[in-house]
Image (cartoon, rainbow, N blue to C red; front, side):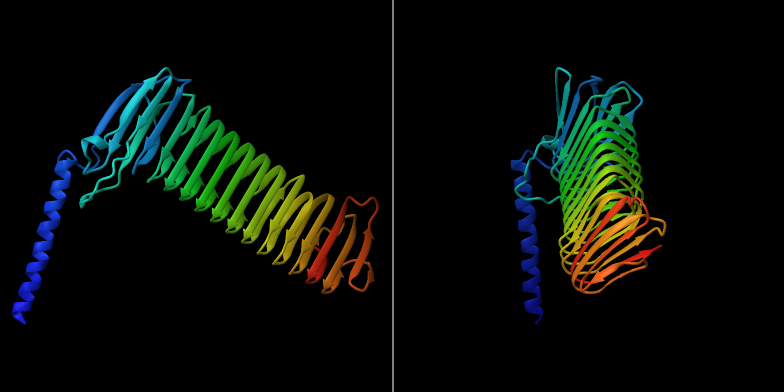
Length: 379
């Protein structure tokens, strides 16, 4: 038994020695062992001239990119991390008013980075800069740390999240993450913002003012927890719900889910379109007119200042609307399987009902339920 233990221990030692030897050989082939740096001390720093109306393009490999502010008039680039080879240090190029900063993708054959720590590339930008910023990384997030006023911001990650942590004023913002979420945590003012994730959610946590807002999540939800004011907003998910807990003030609202429900509060709109292929729709307070449709799930809505036509259609699920008792309206309701009830007089015939309440109706309620009941009640 002792002999077997000694043999096994010998094999383990032999394997460890072999691994270290191979690793050393690999590092020698690649130019030697990486240098170790102290925590909090950049491995490389460079000051670059800043062209206030130009463009800054940043691309990082296996690095988080942080965009912060400097009190000076130059761009300051600092690279942090440990166990970094010389060929992994950032490079830069300035052509005209365009500044390019990059960390190349250098794959190691074997990685023995036992002391690897979080790596980040910090770009400190003067407050006077008002041009375009492009920041892209394949493995690591992108974060705007301080407040800025730029012409345009384009943020992209393959693996890692995108976060706007402070106030940002721009003409246009694009934020795209393949594997990671997008978070708007600062006050944002822009003409147009487009956010998209393949695997990860989108969260608006602070005030967002824009002419046009687009948020699309393939696998993940969309959440609005900040005040939104916009002319046009489109929220879309393939697999995930849409939630809004703060007021949205807009001319036109579009919200659609393939698999997931929709729950919204305090919607001030002129026109809206809400669709859910699989999931219910619950809206507490919505103005204007529009269409609401679910294929699998019920609809529950509280209408405030409705106008024009409100059309609600469910394939499998009931419809329940709450309206103000002083509202003047017309109703046309039909259901294939289920009853129709209301807190007012109506003309009922089998599975349909008609009503005209008040003088000069301001809204037409068109309600269709294939499998489910219909109820219209006063608040």
